Image (cartoon, rainbow, N blue to C red; front, side, top):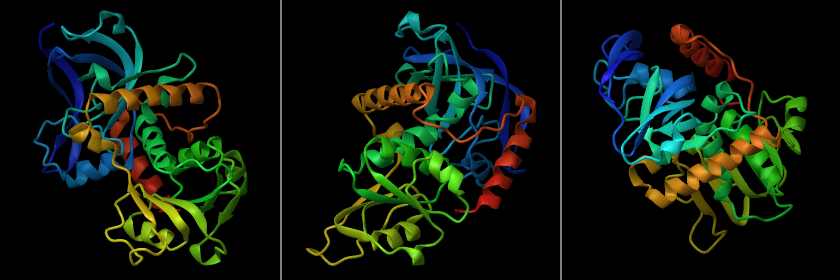
Length: 318
């Protein structure tokens, strides 16, 4: 397959915006597949990176970032020379590196080792929105050693922690949360034991806490842990331990899904993709319930970015 062109949304760093243009589409490298994107996942990181451009994307870069990377879903249309030909036609979802051309185009090239097969009963619109929050949630709960019946606390009830709470329940934990906006009905659906509206109303200590608000929020939750407890920071990290040595012996964990693109080896990616496929099977079976999805046409991508920004500003960190 030779290089061709495609329609894609590309960055204008000076205007801090994206526009629909015709761009070059390279043939997949020997270890890559080329995916026809049938759905694109959008996350607040999309508009933050377009507006702030922290990676110094050049003009014409195709973005499409969801959390720590690029999420999308579609069908494999072409493969590199070293890729199993049976992958052609497979429905897949993926999580891509921030530095690479993203999912805001009709096609995306990505390493064959970094795609997850999507079950037939999972819509591609759902599959495109899931890789980043679903894999991040799995990484977060995997940091906490299993202890059936132990109580854990979650704060920052966005898409990631709503999935984290469900995964924690499936592992046998009892889950409480801090949220100013989560309704009792939503809590029941997520198998949450109790909702606290603020940290001041907490009256007990926890085996583990998972925070998606930032390092300051995580540090506050660390103070609520029992001896030998675990704090998991999804956004940022607790920069220094809050206790003296040889006291509560708290374990500090951070989650960096995107870090695997630079620091993960082939075994790490094989494990992650296998786990991702199992999680998608749980979604298909109704064992995990993702957040409702708003769907926009490809040509209305700027409207989708605006919606994402307004929705996050309305929700805050609740």
